Amino acid sequence: MNGSHGSVHPVEETPTTDVGDVAPMVRMKDIEGMPGTRGGLALRGIQLGFAVAAFAIMAASSDFPSVSAFSYLVAAASLQGLWSFALAVIDIYALLVKRTLHNRPIVSFFAVGDGITTTLTFAAACACAGITVLIDNDLDLCSVNKCVQFQSATAMAFLCWFSTLPSFFFNYWSLASR
Image (tube, one colour):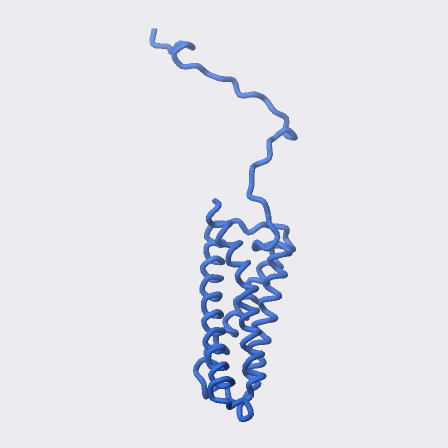
């Protein structure tokens, strides 16, 4: 006899369950501020607002092309604005179809994009702050230049960077917690 014995190969019976008794799958919680949540959409809206404000204030000045740091701020703010707008559209779509954005490649893309735009915005804000301090305090040329516009655009860029940090950290945290 070549048959297997129950003591050698135990076979467990699968319990019968009703369709309604299926245990829910364990998923990561949707923390407000993560992609696809209302908090995430609010963060993207705030980022977009500050990026547009920094861009508009600096671009309204006729002196900004003469200083490379100010041109860099315009470029960084426009990139941040486009990035925030695109992800806000994705967040709106995810909220409308009631889907979560926990797909690893998508979250990786969001984390890398947020990291790049955060770094660019911070570098542009720091460069503009240095030039603004140079013009205002060291050279005393504020009467000739539009220092208030430069300072306002720099402040908006720092606020944009500060509002981008939570998005980056939430994306990175959700990526690292998988």
